[in-house]
Image 1 (tube, rainbow, N blue to C red):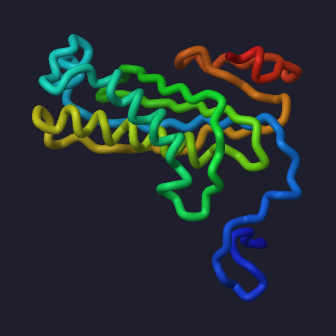
Image 2 (image 1 turned 45 degrees about the vertical axis):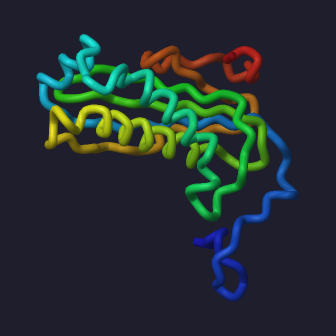
Length: 171
Protein backbone atom coordinates (compact mmCIF):
# COMPACT_ATOMS: atom_id res chain seq x y z
CA UNK A 1 0.00 0.00 0.00
CA UNK A 2 1.44 3.35 -1.04
CA UNK A 3 1.16 6.13 1.53
CA UNK A 4 0.40 9.35 -0.33
CA UNK A 5 1.62 11.61 2.50
CA UNK A 6 5.18 10.31 2.14
CA UNK A 7 7.65 11.34 -0.55
CA UNK A 8 10.25 9.03 -2.15
CA UNK A 9 12.60 9.58 0.82
CA UNK A 10 9.89 8.69 3.34
CA UNK A 11 9.43 12.29 4.47
CA UNK A 12 5.99 13.61 5.34
CA UNK A 13 4.49 15.98 2.76
CA UNK A 14 1.16 17.39 1.77
CA UNK A 15 -0.32 15.43 -1.13
CA UNK A 16 -0.02 17.44 -4.36
CA UNK A 17 -3.46 17.90 -5.94
CA UNK A 18 -2.75 20.42 -8.70
CA UNK A 19 -3.26 17.83 -11.45
CA UNK A 20 -6.63 16.64 -10.11
CA UNK A 21 -9.86 17.99 -11.61
CA UNK A 22 -12.29 20.07 -9.58
CA UNK A 23 -15.35 17.91 -8.90
CA UNK A 24 -18.28 17.95 -6.51
CA UNK A 25 -17.32 16.35 -3.17
CA UNK A 26 -19.52 15.14 -0.33
CA UNK A 27 -18.81 13.55 3.05
CA UNK A 28 -20.97 12.51 5.98
CA UNK A 29 -19.69 11.64 9.44
CA UNK A 30 -21.32 10.81 12.76
CA UNK A 31 -20.55 10.50 16.44
CA UNK A 32 -22.40 9.83 19.65
CA UNK A 33 -22.25 11.39 23.11
CA UNK A 34 -23.47 9.18 25.93
CA UNK A 35 -25.06 11.00 28.87
CA UNK A 36 -27.51 10.59 31.71
CA UNK A 37 -31.26 10.62 31.08
CA UNK A 38 -31.64 13.71 33.26
CA UNK A 39 -29.22 15.71 31.09
CA UNK A 40 -30.96 14.52 27.93
CA UNK A 41 -34.21 15.83 29.37
CA UNK A 42 -32.60 19.17 30.26
CA UNK A 43 -31.30 19.52 26.70
CA UNK A 44 -34.67 18.54 25.26
CA UNK A 45 -36.38 21.21 27.38
CA UNK A 46 -33.61 23.81 26.90
CA UNK A 47 -32.85 23.88 30.63
CA UNK A 48 -29.04 23.76 30.38
CA UNK A 49 -27.72 26.86 32.24
CA UNK A 50 -25.26 27.82 29.46
CA UNK A 51 -28.02 28.17 26.85
CA UNK A 52 -29.14 26.38 23.69
CA UNK A 53 -26.89 23.34 23.40
CA UNK A 54 -27.78 22.48 19.81
CA UNK A 55 -27.52 26.06 18.52
CA UNK A 56 -24.06 26.45 20.01
CA UNK A 57 -22.87 22.98 18.91
CA UNK A 58 -24.17 23.53 15.37
CA UNK A 59 -22.29 26.81 14.98
CA UNK A 60 -19.14 25.28 16.51
CA UNK A 61 -19.31 22.30 14.13
CA UNK A 62 -19.74 24.54 11.09
CA UNK A 63 -16.84 26.76 12.18
CA UNK A 64 -14.67 23.71 12.80
CA UNK A 65 -15.33 22.31 9.32
CA UNK A 66 -14.21 25.64 7.85
CA UNK A 67 -11.02 25.63 9.98
CA UNK A 68 -9.98 21.99 9.44
CA UNK A 69 -6.80 22.86 7.52
CA UNK A 70 -5.71 25.05 10.47
CA UNK A 71 -6.09 22.10 12.86
CA UNK A 72 -4.82 19.16 10.82
CA UNK A 73 -1.41 19.95 9.33
CA UNK A 74 -1.57 18.07 6.01
CA UNK A 75 -5.16 18.94 5.08
CA UNK A 76 -5.69 21.26 2.14
CA UNK A 77 -7.57 24.51 2.64
CA UNK A 78 -10.99 24.20 1.04
CA UNK A 79 -13.79 26.63 0.33
CA UNK A 80 -16.86 24.77 1.53
CA UNK A 81 -20.15 25.14 -0.29
CA UNK A 82 -22.32 23.72 2.49
CA UNK A 83 -21.98 22.33 6.02
CA UNK A 84 -24.89 20.91 7.98
CA UNK A 85 -24.91 19.61 11.54
CA UNK A 86 -27.87 17.51 12.70
CA UNK A 87 -28.75 16.09 16.10
CA UNK A 88 -30.90 13.13 17.06
CA UNK A 89 -31.95 12.11 20.55
CA UNK A 90 -31.35 8.39 21.01
CA UNK A 91 -31.40 5.95 23.89
CA UNK A 92 -28.71 7.10 26.31
CA UNK A 93 -27.42 10.09 24.35
CA UNK A 94 -27.32 12.21 21.23
CA UNK A 95 -26.11 11.35 17.74
CA UNK A 96 -24.41 14.15 15.82
CA UNK A 97 -24.09 14.02 12.04
CA UNK A 98 -22.21 16.40 9.78
CA UNK A 99 -22.53 16.70 6.03
CA UNK A 100 -20.06 18.72 4.00
CA UNK A 101 -20.24 19.65 0.30
CA UNK A 102 -17.74 21.42 -1.91
CA UNK A 103 -16.33 21.57 -5.42
CA UNK A 104 -12.63 20.87 -5.07
CA UNK A 105 -9.63 18.75 -6.02
CA UNK A 106 -9.66 16.80 -2.76
CA UNK A 107 -12.29 15.28 -0.47
CA UNK A 108 -14.07 16.74 2.55
CA UNK A 109 -14.07 13.75 4.91
CA UNK A 110 -11.68 15.45 7.35
CA UNK A 111 -13.97 18.49 7.45
CA UNK A 112 -16.99 16.29 8.24
CA UNK A 113 -15.10 14.40 10.96
CA UNK A 114 -13.75 17.63 12.46
CA UNK A 115 -17.25 19.12 12.49
CA UNK A 116 -18.65 16.10 14.35
CA UNK A 117 -15.86 16.09 16.91
CA UNK A 118 -16.12 19.80 17.69
CA UNK A 119 -19.93 19.65 17.87
CA UNK A 120 -19.59 16.76 20.36
CA UNK A 121 -16.98 18.66 22.37
CA UNK A 122 -19.29 21.67 22.47
CA UNK A 123 -22.18 19.56 23.78
CA UNK A 124 -19.81 18.21 26.42
CA UNK A 125 -18.68 21.73 27.36
CA UNK A 126 -22.26 23.02 27.57
CA UNK A 127 -23.35 20.12 29.81
CA UNK A 128 -20.28 19.23 31.90
CA UNK A 129 -21.59 21.12 34.93
CA UNK A 130 -24.61 18.80 35.12
CA UNK A 131 -23.04 15.49 33.97
CA UNK A 132 -19.42 14.61 34.67
CA UNK A 133 -19.71 11.12 33.15
CA UNK A 134 -20.43 11.91 29.48
CA UNK A 135 -18.30 10.21 26.86
CA UNK A 136 -17.99 9.93 23.08
CA UNK A 137 -18.29 6.80 20.96
CA UNK A 138 -18.66 5.60 17.38
CA UNK A 139 -17.12 8.65 15.73
CA UNK A 140 -16.66 7.67 12.10
CA UNK A 141 -16.96 8.55 8.46
CA UNK A 142 -20.21 7.20 7.04
CA UNK A 143 -19.71 8.07 3.40
CA UNK A 144 -17.60 10.03 0.98
CA UNK A 145 -18.36 10.64 -2.69
CA UNK A 146 -17.19 12.74 -5.58
CA UNK A 147 -18.54 13.92 -8.96
CA UNK A 148 -22.29 13.97 -9.59
CA UNK A 149 -23.09 11.13 -7.19
CA UNK A 150 -23.71 13.14 -4.04
CA UNK A 151 -26.16 11.59 -1.56
CA UNK A 152 -27.75 13.93 0.94
CA UNK A 153 -29.66 13.38 4.15
CA UNK A 154 -32.81 15.21 5.07
CA UNK A 155 -32.11 15.57 8.75
CA UNK A 156 -31.35 12.07 9.96
CA UNK A 157 -33.48 10.19 7.44
CA UNK A 158 -30.51 9.32 5.19
CA UNK A 159 -32.45 9.66 1.94
CA UNK A 160 -30.52 9.67 -1.34
CA UNK A 161 -30.97 11.96 -4.33
CA UNK A 162 -30.63 10.71 -7.93
CA UNK A 163 -27.05 10.12 -9.12
CA UNK A 164 -27.40 12.72 -11.90
CA UNK A 165 -28.30 15.49 -9.46
CA UNK A 166 -25.71 18.16 -8.76
CA UNK A 167 -25.03 20.45 -5.82
CA UNK A 168 -27.69 22.87 -7.08
CA UNK A 169 -30.28 20.11 -6.47
CA UNK A 170 -29.12 19.57 -2.90
CA UNK A 171 -29.09 23.13 -1.62
